[in-house]
Image (spheres, rainbow, N blue to C red):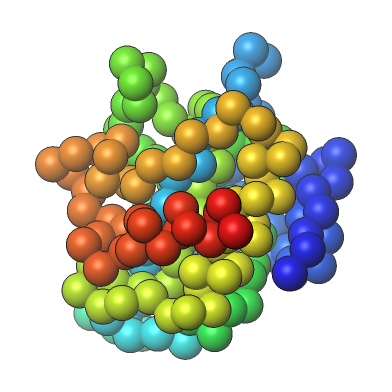
Length: 181
């Protein structure tokens, strides 16, 4: 799959559902980190609308007991890769998505300032789908072409002790192999 990133920070061919949970990056920010996450809403369930509703501030806290705990959150990511391979963009790459929280990478804090966040629909204890790896690799290659100094880390790498995703079932070697193929 060949993707292109336009000057506004949107990837052509990916559905764009704008999230209000973003703001301008600092003027001196250089995008040089890709953060991989996982998410499922409700936890351990796939294919529903909960992730979209969370990122667009439309989550109905009455729909599931867990939603009462998180409905107040104002979070987003730049991209979501669903288990069936569908990709959704919520925040232009030129903007700061609110995905990393309290975080640090290589001695620099505030990772949201200089990173792009990709959520994989999944959970720590379940493997990701083949098409998710393919789509993640395609999207990562596109982003690395636009931002050549981009490193790749998991949420657990930038927020150790606080976050565990993308989790032990994420196959880092497989991603590296796909990126060099």
